[in-house]
Amino acid sequence: MKNTLIKTLDLHGETGDVSRFLVKDFIEEAYVMKLPKVSIVHGGGVTLRLVVNDVLKNHPKVKSYKLNYFNGGEPIV
Image (cartoon, rainbow, N blue to C red; front, side, top):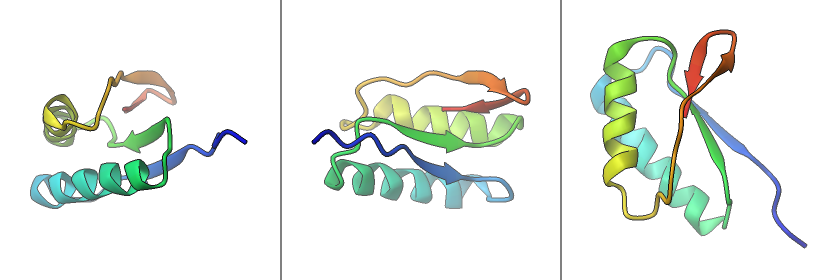
């Protein structure tokens, strides 16, 4: 049976440094759980968006990512 669970990490209220750590840990956890997709909610601010994009762009276990602007205007990676 295929794992169709989509796990979400919500970074609202976190700092850039904490978010960087949380995203890396979240990716590792999702990899161990063999999740094909995850969501990372970081809100509309520039700082967290840049931090999340940097981690995702450079993480060897991330195949691809995209922004989703259909969540009330807030991006979800």
